[in-house]
Amino acid sequence: MTENPENRAHVDPDTLAELHRLARSRPRSGRGQTAKLGAIRTLERLGREGKTTLPMPDGWHPQPGTEWEELDRVHFERHPEARERWWRNLHP
Image (tube, rainbow, N blue to C red):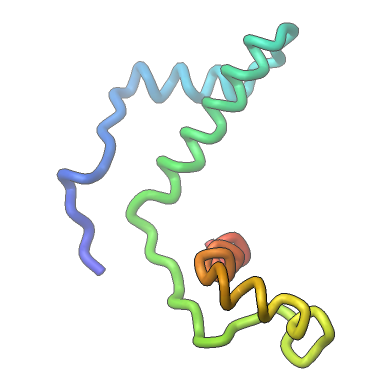
């Protein structure tokens, strides 16, 4: 998978420094907590950009052969994107 540099978000050094400062801060208000959370999420997203993830095997389940797999089957048949999200969360 090749990376297209036009799709990458460009963040200038000052903005990146401010995101790091906010992520390390100890907010006292709800507005400050929201700003910190947004900074952390943005830094995580920027850290994931350009990384390739492993392809999900067909019929993958984290606990194959268990009752949970049987219970999840109907949901995953209706919502295949849920299985894909689960895979990406376990294999970043």
